[in-house]
Image (cartoon, rainbow, N blue to C red; front, top):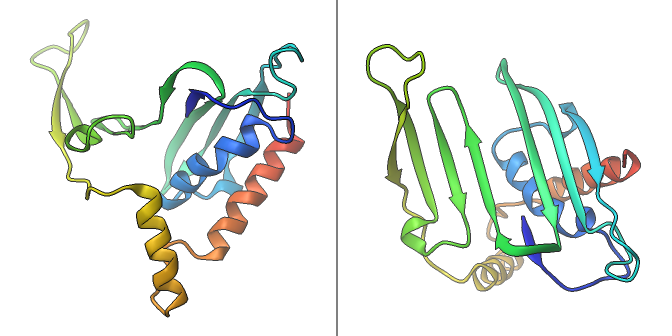
Amino acid sequence: RANFGRFRTYESALRDLAPHDLSMLHALGIDLTGLAWQVHVQDQPAALMPHSDQTTLTFQGTLKGADLRGSLFLSRIWPLKEQLLIVQGTQGCLVLDDTKPWAEKLWHGIYTTTGDTTGAEPTLQRTPLVVPQGEPLRLECAHFLACLAGAPCRTPGAEGLTVMRAVQTLERNLV
């Protein structure tokens, strides 16, 4: 998650940007408290940014008995806008690129090779997945109003608490 964003004096990229990606990891069934985290912050000169505005988080753990490793890159000083989530496995990947047009936002890829795989160049068969169209903030506000009227909440407060506790833990482990 990166963009050339507003300069802020009151929060870091970790606190500003990480909750979105941590919430997505949580939604994928990953226990944020069960991961081993390493946090690396690239401080910028105070004249550019008063806080740490570029952070890389790496993690490892297990998910349903499988080895899990990954990283999150967060920046408000990146020259390109990127909102990209890639989940990669031994046979394929799932890619969410939130900067793409609706028809290209989400796709599933399967790796294939022919014959001997030593030195072979794999191919990637892409299958687009349907993402309902809509302006995200408008949909979120409409859902919030529906919850106030009694509809079940897709993201309960307990998830928000889990994500913010993870952010606080990460802030304490700054390298």
